[in-house]
Length: 539
Image (cartoon, rainbow, N blue to C red):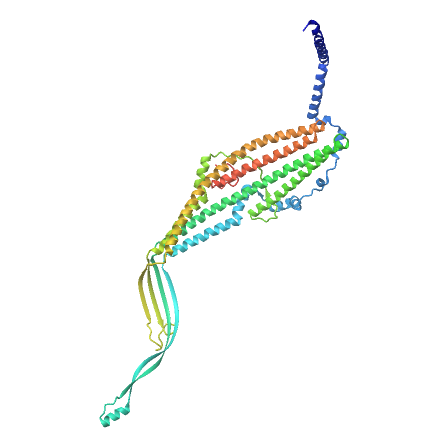
């Protein structure tokens, strides 16, 4: 390319360089003012966010306070039962005068719940069955009194003389028969009164009596363990219902705070809309979220009433009584190791003990089923007194009687065959023993799994409590900043509503974590066979 041809390109390149220099100088001249303008804008927004009261018109604040709430908030359409609980609760509690915390509630349930009465009746019945089995070893006496009337005819034969033949024989010297045989019928009757006393003493029953007594003794021990098992079941039911009540009350408080925050936001949005600073959409969004919060509050209040009724039922109190249940959800340290928990569970669980007794009872049933294979030996003594009068006296000749008899003897009997009935019954009893042994092994595995699960639930809930508290603090601070930005007109209504939703969610998560933690404590103490009435740390 020649020098003449390169000149247009050089001119174009020089023009671009000159334009860049001019733009750079202009930017350098306005750079300081542009930076200050951006800094002032963000610093002003920050000041407005930090001090919303200073950025808000006092007249606007007064107008916000005068904004009416929606009808559903003003009317407070709550369940009549809620009004009754809040209006008459003070009178009912004043009449009762007793505060029921968790420990008092559990004690009341153990004393008054019908489940405990049923378990105690079962224990009393097993004691009587044991006494009955012991009494079967002794002799059995039988007394009987009988009356028997006998009417009959005795058929016989008699010889009658023939006087005519005798005369002929005398006169003529013949040998005609002088007698002849005839049949006779004689009436016979007898009144027999009999008193009999019989004593029977079993000597050997093929181990049936011994096995029956051992079975009754094991049944009593099982009933004693059932008392503890019923207590643990009732303790867990009362504690879980109590914790659910505390959770419902915490949800009510959280929902009330949520309603208060949304009411404030609704008033602000309505005031800003009235002066033309915000669109109608902000008001509608705030009203919609406020209505949802009211719905959640109504559900939470109803849950409180339901749990009070459930606790009253467990404590055998009137369902309509507004009992003064007191307590709060809190963190209670749990320092036991999993090995200690498992060891306690295997040693103290009443259902494991009851399962062992069930196996032993089944073994005794197998021995009872085998008793017909052995000879049955018993001794008997019988005394009989009889007569033909009601007082056992002999007063007439109505019939022959033996006034008194005494008999003593020993009887041994052995069942020869029964077409396999005894054998098949014995095999069925042995299979039942094997089945219960397998059930016991499974129950032991289930106990270990339950303890491990509840132990992990405790650790999980403890971690969630720490996280939930941090999230709640952050969400409250975020809500405060969102409200401030909205009032400074640098934020949106959606930001405020989202921040409020995050606060409600954080409060619910914290309540749920605390409830899950204490519920896991109640579960693991029961799983270890321990009655910890107030869930305090085991000593």
